[in-house]
Amino acid sequence: MASLVLQGRPASAGLAAGPPMRLAADETVSGCRTPHADSEKEVADLRTAIETATNRLQALIARVDAHAAQIIGFQIALGKDEDLCQPIFAAIRQGAAADEAWRGAMNDEIETYERSQNEYFRARASDLKDLRDQVLACLFGVTAAEAPPGGAVMVGTDLSPSRFLSIDWKAGSALVLTEGSATSHVAMLARARGVPMIVALQGDVPVDATEILVDAVDGTVMVGPTDADRQQFQRRMESDAAQRVAIEKSAYRPAVTRDGVAVTVSINVADVTELDSLDPEVCDGVGLVRTELLFADASAQPAEDAQYEAYRHILNWAAGRPVVVRTLDAGGDKPIAGLTIDGERNPFLGVRGVRLSLVRTEPFRVQLRALARAAVHGNLKVMVPMVTVPTELEAVRSMFQEEVGMLERDAIAAKVPPLGMMVEVPAAAIAPEVFNADFFSIGSNDLTQYVTAAGRDNEAVGKLADPLNPAVLRLIANVVRYGASAGVDTSLCGDAAADPNVLPALLSCGLRSISVGIASVGRVKAAIAKLDLSAMKSGAPTTA
Image 1 (tube, one colour):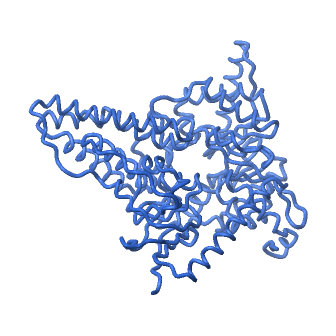
Image 2: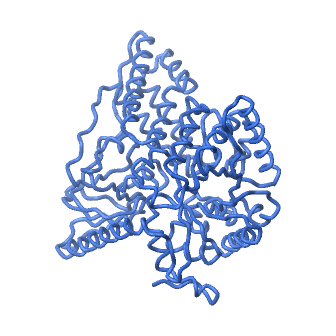
């Protein structure tokens, strides 16, 4: 009997095989409550359910990393949002049942997110569904689902972040969803944990299926494989495992092309805990610290001392290697409650990055003070995001100097570190010579979307947002060329550097310094070792 092959979209690359297990536990709690005659008792029941659900989420935070905690923190903050809850309580006092009022209000909120033209906000709808269902489960006394059996492939419509985090993925081998998004929080979590994941599967895995093969590289799910299918898939899995071992070994070697060209490979860091189990010998430094994730908790922004300790921790880990910290890059697809500006019609072209920092100056000055104090403990560099005109960079430099002056008057050790800028706005890439920057770091993600006028969060125009677009490469080469002539170090810290299909073109532009995600270091170094850049004058670089 022929195998059934279903096509989906890869969200987290990898290969896995095993029996399918349904994610029925994530279905919305159905049924209706009979409300108390006393509406205040009904309000109290909902308050208790919300508190129980948020307490469960809070307990989950203690078991996950900071990135996952950020996702759960969003749900907790929403559950405690009085602006959301007060109209629900008012509806209950007018006679609505607690579940009816909560479900209705949350469905309206979810619908608003799902209708958004911004893929980031559409992907957040699943987080709201998760909170809705967790509170309803507490209201109806529904218990959590059982853990999956070893090697099972989770199959369902969609999956909430908290449910994903509650699964022991050492037991569960992969995740297949008929809905979902490659930009969802669950997809981000899957990639961080190496869990193969496919979304938008076209068709359903039959209920009587006993075995499926998941290829989250090509995006296919094979149901009912034959012996020949199994053998071929097993060979692919063994080959993939061998490649991973080779890549891990490559991480400890210097990045040098076949023709002897050295390339500096640094890492991108979003959370200090990422460094706890990482040997600094695998990289040449930290090329990007995304500090906006330190601001992710909606209830409070980190105090100066907390930020100082985080920056100092990274500097100590780097042991003299350069550490480039990006100042707060909030806005766009990274809103922060109480800081970013709500309701912008086009947040990617709005008040984000340095634009926001120069509007919300007090939290920005707190960050500058923490950075100035940390700068005395290591090789710290600071770069400013979304710089469009020279006055923005000079304003930051002036504020930095002011804060250092005040710290020194209080006898606190501090200094102004080298101050560079992200080159991600076309205006900066076209005329880098007008900026008095100590270094440049090209942000390929935003530069590509602005040059191609194709939002990187919009799947409908995803193919247009191509870093290999000649206009994008020409601008990158322009920045590199100017930096070399003016003695200004230039690097690239966007996702393009981790793509083996794009990396040769970037090095052909003259780039000799890149920064990539921690998980990509070995793969990128292995790709560099296969390149021969001596052919770049006559054409594209060759590979072994």
